[in-house]
Length: 333
Image (cartoon, rainbow, N blue to C red; front, side):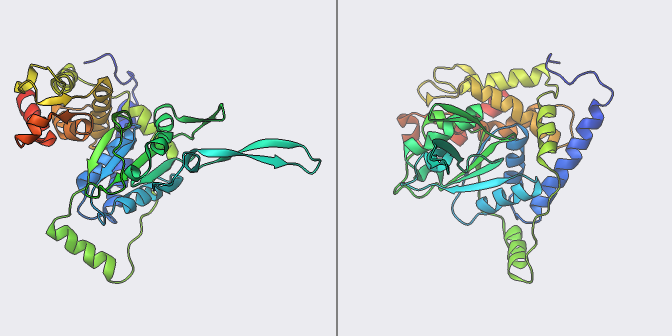
């Protein structure tokens, strides 16, 4: 067992069980308003429990915005939404200083906070804003504060960004730079619901009064669970699996049976950190006291797919990032 473990306290199992019970209710509450997206709900909760940010990618109409709104309600978080457009400016996100004059005639600058000063920020269609505006989120997502006119302004705790992106529309979009993609703990692909789920959604949303999400816990419980996640024990086998998988996804690696020249650029150490936290969060969400290699396999794609890219030759041969990650998992885990 690694040294990074829960303290040897008698109430540690009870704390884990209580947190697991709370977030099982959170997951069930989200399932009453979001249909056919169980995996998406799970990965989003894993992101929050791990203390990270999530990038939701899917075509319009798949309840990405509703998921974020419902999360705010169920978790009792303050929320804000920013619709990213080409004319959005950094100050529209972080805030700005304005000159004010008092009754006595004295003038002073006052900082007016932007929407980033919230506990759960939805960055809708984040790739529609210019790189300059996208970069306004970089410091906030990594350091939990923003700097305006040389002054530091701390963000609340917890602070999470859930950004959405439409994979189809390329007109008027600006691809996210690798440095910003790396700030997202998971890339969560939102697919179409199956037939039965879509049928239940039709009945629930077009007949009678639509069910609304209800609060289950508050931000204090989320922060406590995040602290608990970081102290969940991780076995040496799981840690070795994480390191082997991430290192095999880099160019020039001889592990995993991937031929040289297939991977153009791969994940850095932040991917290992993200996967380590994510598997712990998934274990807590399932009510387990430690993660397994199954958790590593389940979260490999969400952690790695936005942190690596295939070469032109590999793409021309019909290979995909998802396929390469699946091959690595099969050979290494």
